[in-house]
Image (cartoon, rainbow, N blue to C red; front, side, top):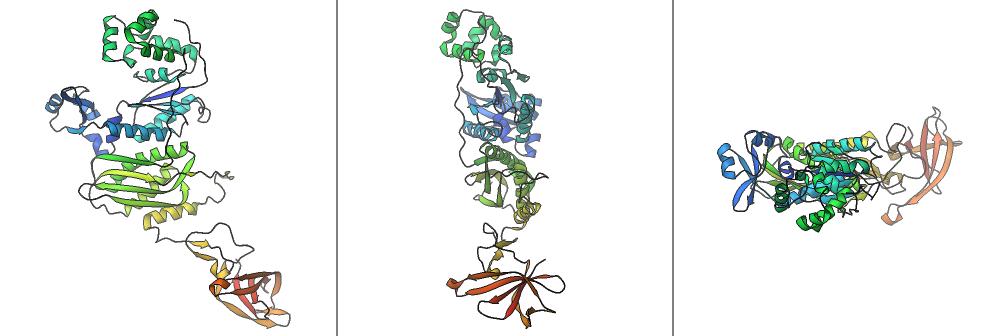
Length: 483
């Protein structure tokens, strides 16, 4: 068999979620301590599709009949396999994986392929990126088998090995494939039996056989996949195209009646959301969490942000504050998290100490106080689009931009009428006019028309004051004091 001739700069990371169905269920802390199995219908009998670590310690194995499993563990928790939920869970993981690369391939029914060649430098190299993916998987509650290879087919086959294999050079690919056990290949039962009868155990033994015989015995499709794994042929894949909004549901395996249990499952949904937002270079400013109860209709909780975000840890803290003041109407069996349409992220250059201009700690404080106490309970002063000083502020959101000219921190309500001295306005002594006049003329459409000329003045103590007089009048008024 000749050495590979097709070269490329691509590098593929395979994630094989062998326990995807089980890990999607094990979202509460209580589930880790119970013997749990997933049941499936195979031919004419019911058998164990997967078992939790506790169940495996008690002797339950995949493929075991359900009758035997229940005899071993009478108090076994049984959940029927739902392939639709597994497909949905794999799609959620594809959302999450977008934070590492824009090229994510669904390898149904329980795998992902990530092209990491273009993003490895961004994460500090292949080893650092690989470790970051594994760590992030663990935070989601998954422990996939992984492998890295120059093409997707070889990476997927290598991911069936118990130990992670990393191959970054084409010249090492052929050697690794020759010692690959045939059990790692995607073979039908008929193909596997035929290889066993021939006494073949490793892929290298197949490669020494004539190609015509391999094609006749195993078909052109299998030979084509073999050529892709060896690098003889290109292996184009259709990449996952995420929607521009996020919606995911998580079914809890046991009833949850406290905030801590909800956060344990919510963390997983937010990690998936964070990956989708990072991959799309987007943010969101509103999330809706729907709680699905046992015997009553579901209820929705809305979290509104002051500024768009995408950090899952920060969003989790906001939800923690929000849920602490939420009384659960009944035990919760499921969570559904939905976002509004994604918004393109607005990137800003970082300042000297790592904060973007305008990114202040009080912004975080406002959002956490509103999450804890309610959006209508915590208000803040905001600038309004009005030239009249007494109408240019309010409680609520700020209009874009700032008022023109210098404005004092304190306004007097009502303005204080000043004495007229021999050389101008007088207040405990003569006032010296420094800047002005600034004409403000507005409000005629509301019946509160003002026509004023404003000045900045200094008194005998050096304090700066904001004065005005009505247009075409001589009386002076003190309207504000500068800090």
